[in-house]
Amino acid sequence: MSIIEKAIEKMNKKSTVEASVEKHLSASRPEATAPRQSQVKEQVSRQATPAHERTLTETKNTVAKSIKLDFNILRNAGMVVPDNTRSRIADEYRLIKRPLIMNAFAQGATIVEHANMIMVTSSVPGEGKTFSAVNLAMSIALERDKHVLLVDADVARPSVSKLLHLGKNPGLIDMLVDDNVEFGDVVLKTNVPNLSILPSGKTHPHSTELLSSNEMARLTDELSRRYSDRIVIFDSPPLLATTEAGVLANHMGQVVMVVESGKTQQKLVKEALSRLNGPEIIGFILNKTIGGVMGGEYDYSYGYYGGGYASGE
Ligand SMILES: Nc1ncnc2c1ncn2[C@@H]1O[C@H](COP(=O)(O)OP(=O)(O)O)[C@@H](O)[C@H]1O
Ligand SMILES: [Mg+2]
Image (cartoon, rainbow, N blue to C red; front, side, top):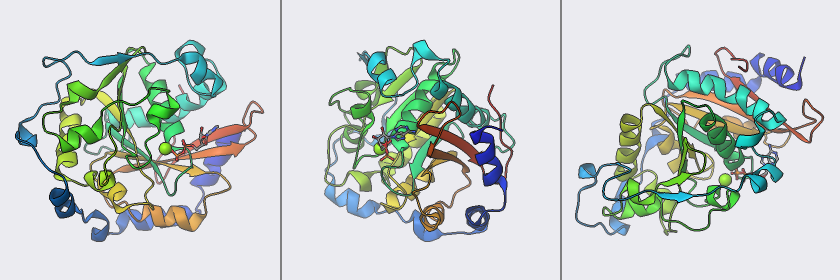
């Protein structure tokens, strides 16, 4: 039995965390959804066009900017890359992505709204959200018929661009604060044909609050509707760092909780889960487990609460 299977078996047993998830699934926590919109409205100066009249077209009078990902750098950083799909990490993410894709396109056991919108989060910083979100996005985009938009929504600590060595680009925040900035102006096409990236964009003193703004709600809603054939992965703030992460989760169909193996305390995971109160499907990546299947430094496991576990392809 591989370390992944062992971990899944462990996760499927009635652990304390699982009990808390069952509690979470039946509990209603209205306080977690309370947005701080008024504060955002007061502090963010708005321009002319109402947001609901904007569109997300990638081509409207603009040609989306293209960027080139350096696969050598990414490979050396231990990440999934197109020309090495038989690597251990590629195999592991193959296992992780399968149930997410099944759910996204309503082929899984559970059907939820916006299932193509996937939030990658954790309890606290440093557990591997960005690492997981980028690998997941790459792994899914490498399937010929699957398109992925990777959104850097951890606006207080944006790091997708850093990890991918993309430099500074306008992005999500620019769209949220300036009605003249459209999706097509800021989305980045990449040299992975099915992978686009929406960077976090400029820094803003109330960037996190913006995640719970009406603008963000409209954006996620429109992304989900317009790109229902595409998977949208949000690298998101940790749930315990800010209430806005919980609000963002309300717009998602699936939440992937990254848990740093042997480090994150169970009570923190439970507390983080209590911040989620929507119908989203919750999956877990047990990250950085020591002693991978192939004897590597790190390994990954993926499990679901209360549901089946899909094995790799
Ligand atoms: N499975 C992993 N294997 C190797 N390094 C990892 C793994 N997961 C995370 N890291 C490293 O750990 C650090 C924190 O990960 P990161 O994804 O930035 O966390 P977060 O986004 O949750 O704050 C980074 O240096 C990242 O490259
Ligand atoms: Mg991060």
